[in-house]
Length: 332
Ligand code: SF4
Image (cartoon, rainbow, N blue to C red; front, side, top):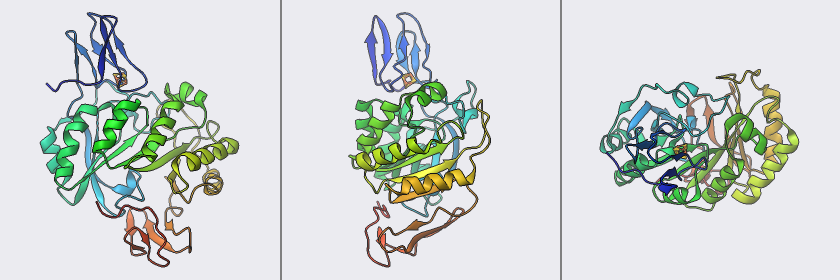
């Protein structure tokens, strides 16, 4: 059994330091943390979710979503059977919030080899919350990189600072959810912490990793234009004007029941965020708003039509028309 990291002794029991939740396990008591993939058994920290993979499939990298990292490629995608948040609008709740998720046991070497087969450019840890899978990712990632592949994280950003610094050493690209600009939203809907996510975003933006951000707009919950303006200014000031933002359309799932986000709301948000950010895209809408347009000359550099991606408007990571650098990672 793989040794669990990030547990510390606490009042005779154990505390998990991997995410801000800080689950504690009393002396002599066992059980799993909120995320279900880490816990304590017979007085020793253990990893019941280690190498237990959900939903293994090869997806377009645009589906993660990542638009400025190896555009037009596909990537093997999987995740652990749990999450450290309890979002009542979770779009993947059947695999993130259940005690009984079907998994496949895949040892690290096997996953690394799968990640470099069938045209895949590496591995994306996604679907649920990969940051809680530290030990498995730490074992898989170097193997994938030795084979020339990329390691991608699609995360809610709820991870403590020290483990995040470790992740940065063996991962290449992240998409992080920024679910709201309101701390109350994080408490009410997710049992999470906005501050933790902001720290993750700032740390990643200053790191060697590529960073993109996703914002799911839920009608009546996080659709205040004033909050959007503050969020856009913060992202631009702390992560850079060239930070890629994906604004995503909500559909009712799990416990929260609202109407799907009107497309006009998404378009209005796109305009507001675009005042501070150069690359804003809409996701979960049927057409349009997903091309990469050169902020300098207006040429279409990456044309997206569903999952069909045409990168002929790029030369390397720059606009083929005017040469403007676009911060697009086109090779590893
Ligand atoms: S990673 Fe899991 S066990 Fe650790 S503190 Fe977070 S929810 Fe609890």
